[in-house]
Amino acid sequence: MKSVDLLVVGGSAAGTTAAEVFRSLKPQSSITIVSDEPYEEYSRILLSNYLRGEIARDKLFLKKPSWYQEKNIEFVKGVKADSLESASHRVKVSTGGEYQYGKLLITTGGSVIRLPITGDDLGNVFYLRTLDDADAILAQVVNSRQAVIIGGGFISLDFATCFRANGVEDVLVLVIEDYYWQGKLDRDSSQVLQKTLEKNGVKVLTNEEVAELRSSISIRDRTPVVREVVTKSGKTFEADIVGIGVGIKTDLDWFKGSGIKVNRGIVTNEYLETNVPDIYAAGDCAEFWDVIFKRQHIMGNWANATSQGLAVGKTIAGVRTVFETASSYSADFFDRPRVDTSRSTGTAKSPRVEAGGHCSFIGVTDESFADEVVTRGTVAEGKMTRIFIKEISGTTRIVGATVINNPAEVGPLTMAVKGKIDISVHKGSLADANFDLKNLVS
Image (tube, rainbow, N blue to C red; front, side, top):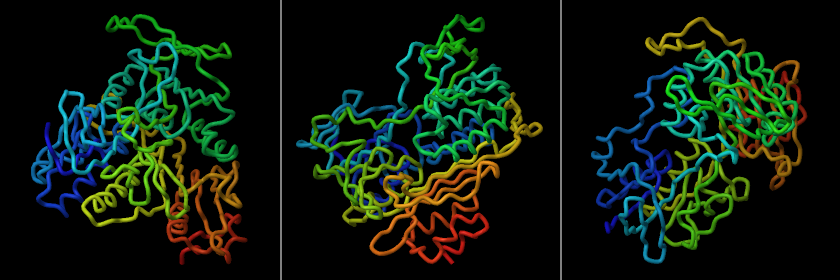
């Protein structure tokens, strides 16, 4: 058994950032990062760019082996945490080894939700979460003409953009809900987004639940692959490649029985401390106390994970730091020309896109939390912003926003949310698309 002052389980943004901050404040302490991935830290948010052929694979990596050596941080890759004994401060790992920690930081993020259907493990069916996933997708997509995407959301957009960028002619999205991204958007905003997909050669079918992925033997390598996607309504669609993006779940099983309080994620306070002494959580797995909106909250994005890593690294080192921010997450899609499918030169062919798309989520976009929602833009205009307003402590504040195809409005809205600005004098102008939102923060 090895003893270590700080054990970090999870080697991505939150964990690596926290380890770096802790090292700067505690130069003599021992640090070990245990990561279930076989690579040093790389950028998950750049995987979509990699899939579109916009950046080379080696540009994804944020840390080289030499960085860990220079920081005197032990990095153990390809190893999973199997169990936690919080009373004795021990973590057992998949190699059979065991660590005794002084402080434990859990930054294990999440894993993809798998569809409970036959065929989701076939060779041309893909989920997207890791670099290995992206590599496998690129190996298959160059030989594909027809693609089916199951699910709506950011991952679905990544699949759609990747498939079209790599020359797949027939791309279909199947959504179980009444409209695309129903859990996050209202119907009109969804319609704006769907029209952008359709302009770029992606068809969307709603109210379609997949029942089965039918396989046959690949002529190329004699392995079973999906050939047809069958829905419960009886429709059948041919496919050379299938992308599935139906959500992310927090990995909670390995520390069952440890006493750590969990809900949707690992419950923490504003310092990212769990209810168990000497155990902390950060990143996608942390359900933290949001000091801005006074509620438990999960933020599943890279910027949040990095910010939480900065805060919790200080707290673990003894400089207690409140994590305070307003979440924001943005994605651009169909904003690049089609790339050379041979991937030999990295140069783009003639543009295939009709119109680029953009979507952003800022702060809390839950209608039940807001007192009022103001809409800017229309479906006909092809862009729409929804602003979520709440009366807090006698002030009128913007607590969140969804922005579709209107990226210029993201900056001032984010500043208004983070700055807790009283916008009462401008509230009556918000619905006017000609009103410059920069006036909110000027």
